[in-house]
Amino acid sequence: MADKDKAERALEAVELAKNTGKIKRGTNEVTKSIERGTAKLVVYAKDVTPPEVIMHLPLLAKEKGIPCIEVPSKEELGTAAGIGVPTAAIAIIAEGDAKNIIKELK
Image (cartoon, rainbow, N blue to C red):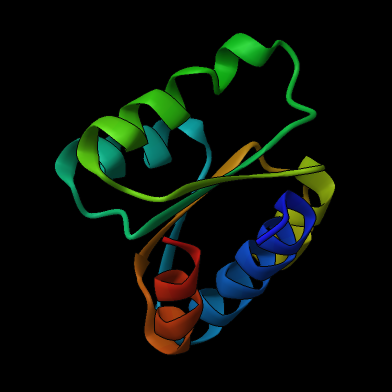
């Protein structure tokens, strides 16, 4: 699966999980959910400045065996999460209807 397709599927998963499951928003909340092992999927934005803010997320997620996907912009991620403001990272805690998409992205 190409990166662009993966990013689109990840945003779709975030939207579904927002409506039918549970998500955590923001770098700190996402970091905590990865460390606790509750995250099912981590999605972070490529255009975060400074990049150090989210640099640790892919490494931490890989360490814990959690799929981690980069999307092009924090605006898109904020919209998919339904918060109306840009966000650097989202973690899906309860998949809801996004379960199949998350399986596909692993």
